[in-house]
Length: 324
Image (tube, rainbow, N blue to C red; front, side):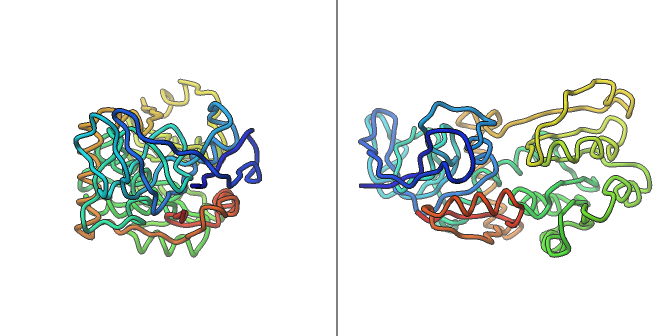
């Protein structure tokens, strides 16, 4: 019988259990997938802790790559044996096998392996909407990316560099600074000993940046606003250090008519055409070599509790793969 991670109540990593599950046959519009690689993301922690509530008992994990083993009625775009990947609610990718709606899948190009696909779907498509749609980065822009050595950060640094931007990024250590720099970050800032707001002002000669991409949340919020040029955009797409404080509109008006957005990937890829277009562009930049996936950790899926511990303590860099 296939196994999967399940949990009955919100809490620490110890609430996740490796158990036998009934997968069943795909119904109309569904497929059954045998996972070869599963992605680990901070959103998994938000679900596990209850920050993002879901019905329990439940599963975790938003992305994976694998092989279709069966299809339900009315599924014409896929067949058994197809190599596919997905990022999709509801959580449940922490599993050896799974049934999922077919319209959430994308086919993998021959040049994209399962590990790269599982690492790229959530983080890579997040980088896509951030850089290509939320604030379309153009040549000559100077931008700030927090957590530049993280999964989204390393992809976004490379992609922004390929678009012709100058990239400033915050990191937590000299080792992470070197990693970010090797992936296109022109100015890594070690926030544990440097004032990132002052460094951004120094780098931009006081002008500030047109956009800040912030997945950290509470700890970087005010400093990020102070990095923005007038009419700049603050993009809050995560809260690793905790949720933002209540938003006071005066914080934005007093700093020069700033803009604020709290986007989510699933809004940007809700339509099938948008998902396919974004995935095509993502796979294209990976195949071209402009973006290289940095899979720096691998854990057995059964050992996912340790993976969560390492992720939350900021010991990980780049992407992490869970092996079913």
